[in-house]
Image 1 (tube, protein in one colour):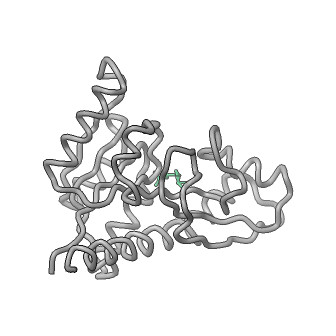
Image 2 (image 1 turned 135 degrees about the vertical axis):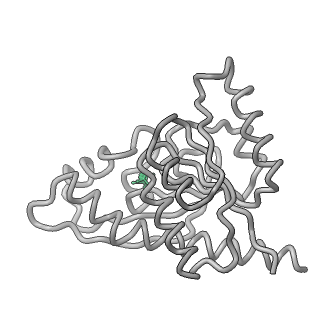
Length: 204
Ligand code: GRF
């Protein structure tokens, strides 16, 4: 069976990438092949995780290019060379242009550590999301996997999972629980769901 070819874009520790690698080796993503990892930063642990799993992985830092256009052109070249079907943003901190995003309608997904439309949009990334959730006093937060369009965190929602706030939570404890209970569960599930749809569309 032809599988959907996946590129995972990362910038840091890569625990969501690891969740995908683990799900693939446990046979939980039968329609997906992790084919390429692109990091916006050199030397991040996500690149090690990819290499340990035998996935081709490259750092493509924005600052090594004169313009965003040149940077994105290089990324598009890599995606085309590998015949990538689906781009997964897993903690990718570099901003992609509207032009880039419009090339891949319903073919870019992102994981965000809140229940969109709460605590999302420009400036809401990393610990900031959880700090704001605690400051606001919500009793339930969670994670969302959504399609990427030209609006930050504004694309159609694919999957969501709720996580309860606990007494004494700090941004750090909440971040960890949202990852363990929601992000690492949802992302492999969403990748398999979209990959299956891609495979079925290709078979038609
Ligand atoms: C995660 O919280 C994810 O939701 C957000 O960035 C973080 C990435 O963490 N988009 P990791 O690199 O996957 O460990």
